[in-house]
Image (cartoon, rainbow, N blue to C red; front, side, top):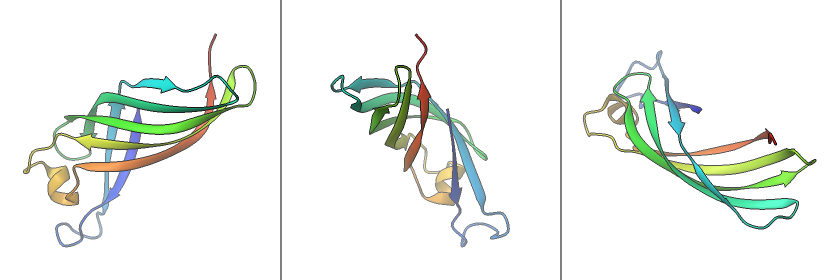
Length: 114
């Protein structure tokens, strides 16, 4: 699940209300390479993107990253994902941001349950 915030085009909306966000939920398949302490990966999966205004739309994400093992179950993760939404030209998100896609960078601690 993700939360993403965008700036609106000031020519299209009131500049005082420039917070435009969307939530996304993706089912992601991930392929790891190697079994060493540093584990690069690629991922891909379909998702649903629900903007603050407008209709939820389907889409997908694809990305890459690396997991760095800290202990048997704890990893530090860095990655970046490309998200693409299947929007219609009259969707509010597209009208206000002129975007059908975005990039997202992420990092954090992953605890694997065994």
